[in-house]
Length: 253
Image (cartoon, rainbow, N blue to C red; front, side, top):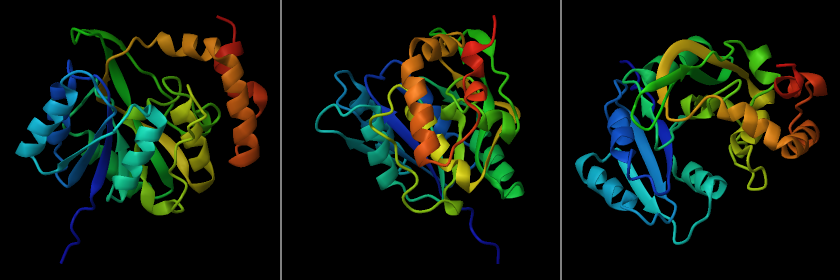
């Protein structure tokens, strides 16, 4: 008898997301991989986000909805989401985004076929507020290039990532509340000792952001980036050459 497909948990932090939330939820609930749970926490929204979440929850029990009693911010909300997950695999999602119907299925198959990979992302299409295509990603596919500078929107789009939780120690998946604005990068550096990273060549995600913003964000937060590198080098066994880690910032235009 075949084992049932494992449960995959999709984390959805929500704050004032009413404009695109329905489109986001539809893309998740219509995934071709059906054994999913979508765990959403509303971080004290002042719009109709929580109402929309509950409307969808009534229609599909795979969506579980919670609400923060006050505004905690992204890192605390993500940690609260992690505590509520039941799945063996963890995926992330942005409420402004849209995932293709086969995203979870293809990434799960990739992890099964590549047991040494702890986290896999995908390429993404960048869209504007009117769903118009404004760019496409060209993220590196292989671990060495990704791990030398695991930065959001530069080597990985973290909202596209699926993590194999089964090969991680119990307490590794935790976001550092002092790592803003590199909340996701900090977490992924913690995963490096436990497996390799990869990006699929497939375009499985629509991300509602201008791709040019990421490099400018890194340059604007260069001091925070330096602190991240120092902390990660000492705490997470993350030791790429300093020049390699900062190559996206210091390379000539």
